[in-house]
Amino acid sequence: MYLDHWGLRAPPFDNAPDGERFFPSPQHEEAAARLMYAAENAKGAAMLTGEVGCGKTTVARAVMHRLPGGRFDCRMIENPATEPVDFIRSILYSFGERPETDSKSTLLDQLRGRLLQRNADGVHPVLFVDEVHVIRSQATFEELRMLLNLQHEGRFLMTLILLGQMPLLEKIAVHRPLAERISVTFHLEALDFKNMTRYMAFRLKQSGAQRGIFKQSALNLIYEYAAGVPLRVNTVCDRALLVGMMRKAESVDAAIVKEALEDIQWKPKPQ
Image (cartoon, rainbow, N blue to C red):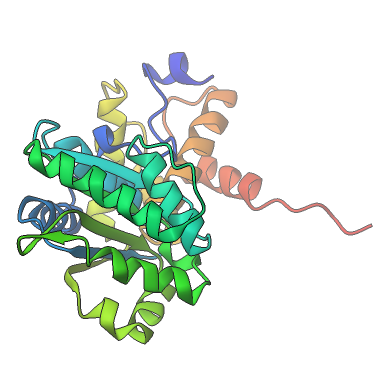
């Protein structure tokens, strides 16, 4: 809606995770490098944690994009909060299988067969499991551990990469046998002010911006609100660009950001 006004070819601050628009801040690059290491060395499990909106899924999708398809078979499960049988079925579906039984042992045999075939083809499967912190079933957590028993000749048949918010750390700690098998971990923090401004410039440039749009006063206010969390940065910047267009502004200043924040934080008055 505001693209023509700002001279953009695409919305710069969409909140949908996009590995191809991955911003390489030092910590996000380190997170990606650690997950790449886990996959390339066929580790059993890795874990990436962080507060909501810090970029965990974006990092995961960037890693999926970087791992060569001829050597890796990357899949993602986005809703793991199911009972063990349904969880295994969802894994099989993600790898292109069609499970036709409710027998857990049969499903595991089918999964093992699929993974063995991919490894025989010279392809290492990598399964990303997002939102692991929402899992409530202790049995499902146990199933995650049991997946690490899928090995052949001393090699893991699949690398399991767990993504989740802070509660995941506590849940994993309770499941010591699983925690001890996670060989690579990293925790994402919010961006500092310098990297937040670099992030904004990166997203704007990728979307076709030919000039600076946000004034320093606007940047200061955005950081005060968003505290460097990319999800919040995207939300307020997107709204500020819309407000700026409606005000026919040539740039986004603090006044426009304030109006955008009032719009975002608006709540209906009680009746």
